[in-house]
Image (cartoon, rainbow over all chains, first blue to last red; front, side, top):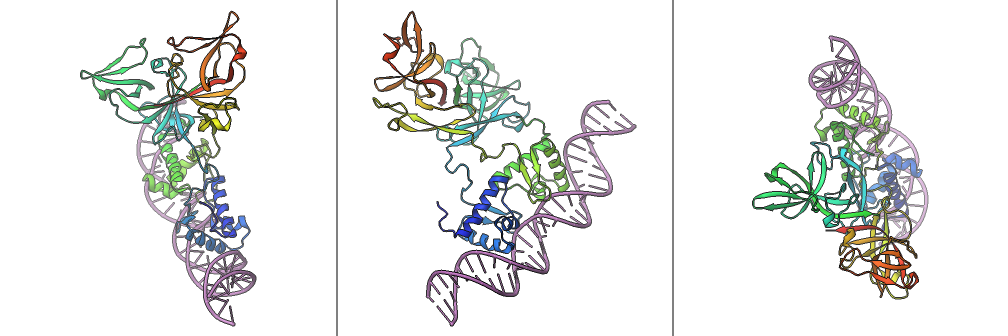
Length: 208
Length: 208
DNA sequence: TTGCATACTGTTCAAATGTACAGTATATTT
DNA sequence: AAATATACTGTACATTTGAACAGTATGCAA
């Protein structure tokens, strides 16, 4: 999509709005646009806004301060963005959902075409309990949020405030949390409800 | 940076601001926050905003409508770019440098803060010759370009038009290309110069 | 107890802001 | 020449909104 249908002056106005939004985090007011572009009347801006809205580039939210919505995805950065950022979870505060702000240690950028979908987050692996499936100490694992677990899935469970990766196995009516390393014993659960599943393993990132 | 210093209520307010900004493109007004969170007084919000500002999460722009700037990098649309794209190498055409355009199958987005530096490219692993070090069939490995190899390094070598990953070992004046899987025999080289080293292993990305 | 920080309600006022009314000017089209 | 779309100025007014004042309540530490 190009901006070709806008007149030069309308483009100036539109660009100013986009730039202001990228700089400050919110759209400009009518008067800020006027001042920024050297107009002496706020009404001039209004007129332009109306025309730009007619052409479909923005939506004017009547009565709202700074009520300009940019309808097309015209932020300067990320014209075509192949990346997405997911939170990297550190220690898990008791009682909080795993992706609560308290737990976020930073953000990891992923390749969108590799890791699709919603509800992703990342976790740094401590220990060698999953070396059997190629997940090593220090690896970052990518998790998709999920409250339940299917038989055989590798899931993140919250144990004593730590998010740990285990294979979820149902057998003979019992539930096991299995570490993919013979040196670690399985954790046997009386019932599936006694643990909190936070998500399902979808990827690994390792740096040497 | 962690967000642990915010009280639960302050987090509700902060999250609401971020969400509103991501939904509409601009921050909410004090009254919109009050309504959204069920407060009856705008002043309650103001009080929270002041405390959140003190803790450094936002900046309040005095007198400006919707004048809330989110100082930390908590916008969904990343203000600054944490990603970099590296070529994904497919089959290697004989005689061409490994990252020649002919060989490029696509691009992979990496996290800049994890994979720093120049000369990176990616390779899809075929086979299970490196399972011993947690690299599985189908994994994408991240490689840094490099013509030489040190003893013990894992490097990409071009063998018969295929880029393959091997550990480079010098012992007793001989050079071995070692697969980290007992099922594969070492390749013994008469001299180091008889093979072409393309780069050194720096990372792994896996999708389940 | 006495603070003290947090978490609120309710009201008021002034500044910021959207919006309408009334014009002017300059091209381009009919 | 008349009509039309664009590009403006200038002013006024009603809302929206930030910001201040005056309180209440609660849990927690000194």
